[in-house]
Image: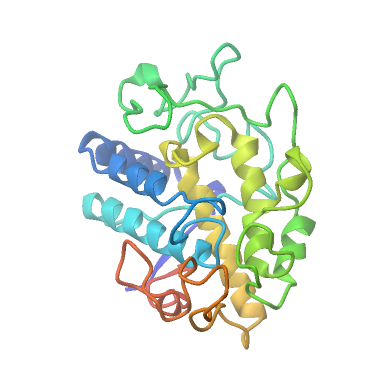
Length: 288
């Protein structure tokens, strides 16, 4: 049966409660931390050797689509009514708007150490201790809007700039690609500092704290953010129906990216699924 992922701002009080409780129970069982470990393991950048699947590569979008599905299935084993909501950060742009409410994700971190002290994921609540991390911080941190050096969330025009590109991805298939929807949405731009962060990347920076880096899954907003990124991919697909995932086939001998990016019909580690198989989600879920 096809289920619906809803805009987080439209969730009822009961839907919010069930989503939060399922996340907390997944954490209590130790299953949530497996998702954190996986994301850290697959956070491979341009400069590292070997296959890149999750970031700075064409498979950024299908990899995270499957990642979301795995989390959603885990939540639904606990409560079949739960789906991952999406956060439209082009509209809900304030640090006090949804999803930053006490009954959902809580708010920003306190000034001294960026520790989140409100909501169900606050350290003092005792149910969201950070155990898998790239640092030794054990509490959830945020710095919504980046207080010392403020930045703004991406706008509708930023998203449109990506959506209107009819090509999915382009050489050199990494964070330096100047053309292609994937990199424009993932958000690796030119220049240094905040001007170089676009769309997806800028949202991670705007949230700050745990959302910056490979352990970003420690903040539950990761899933709401990536559900919206996935929705934007769906919109791009609907707009450019004759264009699909690239590269269509394995890169040729002599290409510096040969063996480093996943082609359309190649398996995406760590799953036995291809980008081609993940292009149509309509038989599994839709967006409301």
